[in-house]
Image (tube, rainbow, N blue to C red; front, side, top):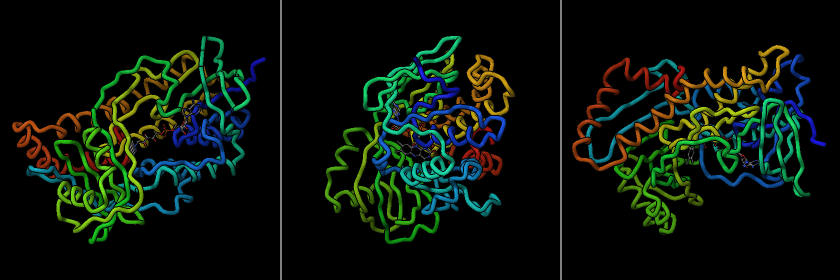
Length: 389
Ligand SMILES: Cc1cc2nc3c(=O)[nH]c(=O)nc-3n(C[C@H](O)[C@H](O)[C@H](O)COP(=O)(O)OP(=O)(O)OC[C@H]3O[C@@H](n4cnc5c(N)ncnc54)[C@H](O)[C@@H]3O)c2cc1C
């Protein structure tokens, strides 16, 4: 006999966890919703992920509402962003004080973010089934069935709604569009002679963007390059690696030092045009995997989670997995998703190439963004709130 739930969330990464908390915060009327969060990683296993996440101001507001923000101890505000291109003119300088805000964004470790959310989930007694990998999901008009492996053979769970938040790992039920960037991001911590002073840098190179984000240890580097080149960078000794980094980024911060290990992430654009199916909805990276340029992926996924929780909480006594609710959610999210996918993909198409004719176009574009206040304001608002800002 299948175990009955109202909502099963498949994947307890930052987006799935945020949704579980959003539903938990839904007040007494919805306290009766039976929610299970299924996470493949066993509870005792720490998250092994070197990436940092640039959180937008909008994400801060959501994480505050969910009770996780105050637990992000080592979070660094970004007060200034400098965008430039290698081998070309044009530069954009974004400044928090000029925009009249305390920070343009905040940098937190992926593992620290996950820990903060897990702590709140535990303190609020959310039903988290850790060490449970979802193997299959099926849905029809009456309900959804989930086959899950919790280490003792497959179990069948039943729910009115299944939310897939597995990061796009393996539960791809829907037709997805894919574009292989043939790039990978090398991620590691570095230190420089110059202190960060809460500045962030995004430098476009023909091989891909290179970002330096301020952290409590120095900088978090996200260095995008062709896949074999990114792999090769992990094999270089510290001196060679830092020399290559210095040659690519430039001398503005002095010499680099490598702190800790280097990790490589392959990069693709992958998205479902309509992330819903009967009794099933995809959110976060399960719905769209973006290039990390401009740090949009988690911020967009968090908005998915927040808006879905809102749609469920405000539905009244209705069915949380009804086609009406899912279609309304899908329509509500369309603009933000499409605009954000287009924004990141266009940046890569325009900047990650060596086409000589495009060099002045890019320079003029950057100069215009930096010099025209409404354009600059648009960029600041996008950084802080996403496409709906
Ligand atoms: C190098 C890099 C830098 C980035 N920088 C930024 C940034 O600065 N700002 C930003 O907003 N975004 C950034 N992103 C994107 C961001 O990391 C993702 O958008 C975010 O992690 C998505 O969260 P998620 O919970 O949807 O998926 P994930 O983080 O992938 O989590 C998925 C979870 O599901 C679990 N899972 C998987 N399969 C199953 C299963 N079958 N059953 C149960 N559980 C399962 C996994 O164990 C995991 O816990 C970056 C990405 C990369 C690669």
